[in-house]
Image 1: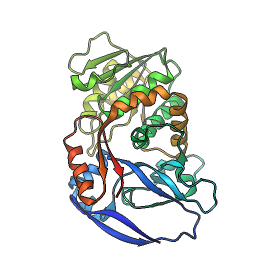
Image 2: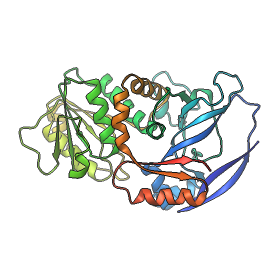
Image 3: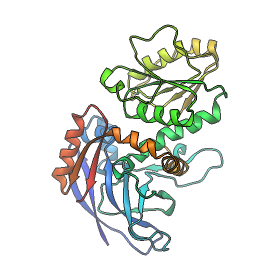
Image 4: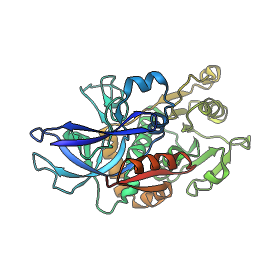
Length: 341
């Protein structure tokens, strides 16, 4: 069959390309229904990813967050119409120690490998996870981002000490919201503190124990462990503050992505005996864990609906471009595309 793929060819320019794909393989064919725009997609779309990266990775279909419905399964394990979340990480090997999302050989959709902006997405059998009935599809659209937080929390749990009576989360954006929400649900008796710059964004964190603006932190505030969800140059100041306020021997989970090196006060890391844990992306096990978690805690889905920013119906390339442009002006939440192209 001929599949239409919507590829970014240069900054803000998207074109249709055609690819012959066979139904005589083991691939599951999924029709995307809801796609979510990520900051990484925007860096490609706007051309701010850098000339070298743009030249190396384009032309490329964007979007690595999305769900769809199965239209064909050669083995018949999935019924036609089954709603699934699509996993963007695509490993090419298995390692007994290193997780699939850290293997250098793995491919990642919308990062040098075509993303989900296609008429149909052909996926390996283990790259789809069925969703439970009744989940809000606009929330499920950014399930990949939720799985990133889940992955970081599980890594933290495996590597940190067992005293977990309080957590500090730096970052008042989408990642900080999701991470603090999962932590509060997994550790209901623990205190969760959120630190941010924007008072209006912090007002959305109604489920945590306390919110603080980063320039008004009381000197008495302390916590056992912390999660950095800021990214960019701001991550340097976030880590600096975390080191100041965290209890000795605490763990600091780093989630925020920075394009440039940041300084870390290693003297105090050593003096306090701190553990820094890096986390990036997620794999199948994290998607399964996340879907099961949301199924068991339906109220979390209700809270996550707060993150639905703009919803755009997409029927043509102009609609795609308009969705990306509107996302650029949004200061809160996720932009979701209802994929009807």
